[in-house]
Length: 233
Image (cartoon, rainbow, N blue to C red; front, side, top):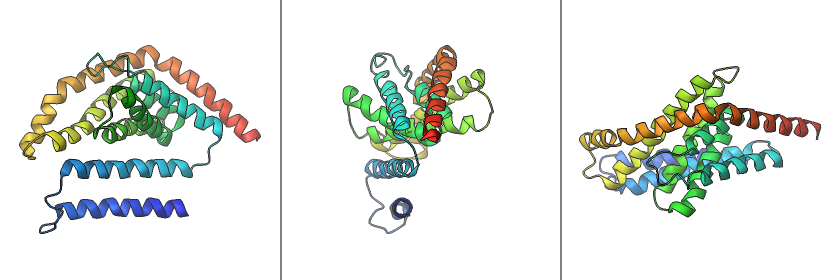
């Protein structure tokens, strides 16, 4: 009950902040939109973590989620030299597919935070945490649409995850680095990023086809063992 109350208050706070920022005559009209976006995204991340904490999970499942988050984060580092090609999005989405949207979000958010200790922390970190987290949520939603693992469908939707990550990060780039904030500059930002998002998409599809089945089998096996042991206890 206490956690539900905290979550509700955070959601209300987000709505109030956003409403004040667009209300004519409000002192928040001239607010720094980049800073506001970081606050909003950070609150959204906090809500996901609170909801995850409310779940009844055992220590082995937490360990598996932490392991996948570490793999997703560390695997990003050696690919930093390649523009938008890395296995992080795939690992986050396959985790969400097998273990659910909430676990997928946690893996994506932690992966961004961990990898940025090596690649550089900054005001973009909360947005990367949120964007990869939403890719994990997408992975969980995909699993609810099919009874069995369909590699071609997953690969295509994992490719879409590359676009999703890029589209969300474009919002941060537009608010933080583009002036003036207008529809014209918004569209220009998305057009400029399209080639890079497409590279991300292609990389995700290739990685999914190459490793999708093996990762799915391994994660499914571990999840079944955890569920059985949890029921036995």
